Amino acid sequence: MEIIVLLKQVPATESLIRIDDDGASIKTDDIKWVVNPYDEFAVEEALRIKEAHGGSVTIVSVGPEKASEAIRTALAMGADKGVLITDPGVSDFDSLIVSRILAGALKEIPFDLIIAGHRSVDKDNSQVGPATAELLNIPHISMVIKQDITDSKIRCHKTVEGGTVVLEMSLPALITTQRGLNEPRYASLPGIMKAKKKPIDVKTIMDSGFDGDPIGESMVKTIVMKPPRERKDGIMIKGDSNLAKAAELVRILHEEAKVL
Image (cartoon, rainbow, N blue to C red; front, side, top):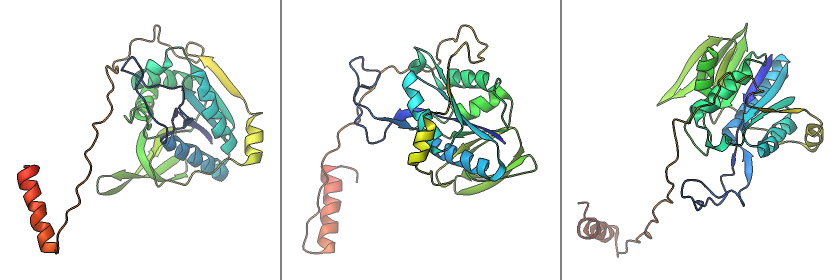
């Protein structure tokens, strides 16, 4: 079983995000960069499938050179090798361009299954996985919380509003991962040491198999970023009884908030 994991490096969720002077990007100097949390589920599931069915796990990422750190984390978890496709303008690429680059690269790499996080926590648009599958002309199932592979087919439990649905498709295929699929493992010290010797193939876009020249302009651009509005402090309702507190709440909603 040859498994590809699509991985992205993102700012850690606990990082303090500040808007840069251009007003349309974030300051990256003091940000801690990590593997996208949903991609951690993808790496873990790929490793579990490898343990059950044999084969290898290859990590593929489109990003700046520092994204090799995230690939190395996945290698320390147990993945076999990595591919980083990088370009000076990669941070400005929209999801469609990233998907086109990934699809071009994956045409050069044998695979039975591609696994990706269903969204990244920075841009949060859930497009790269499905778009890559469409460009490769393979079936895909998104937001998977359980999967089982038998006889060159994969059966998946997919979350939908109010429940789950069970779908089946033939391999090769692509799935995207949702919370609840698994609990990602921590990289062990031996795994970290072994990861230092595992190969990461760093390629330019044109070296990766991308057949579009030029790359083209992103269809989605960030025009401006603004911090969320500061919220007012909450109000503690006082009163000698629950009835008095309820009456005071109604008064505030009617006279001050003017929502009644």
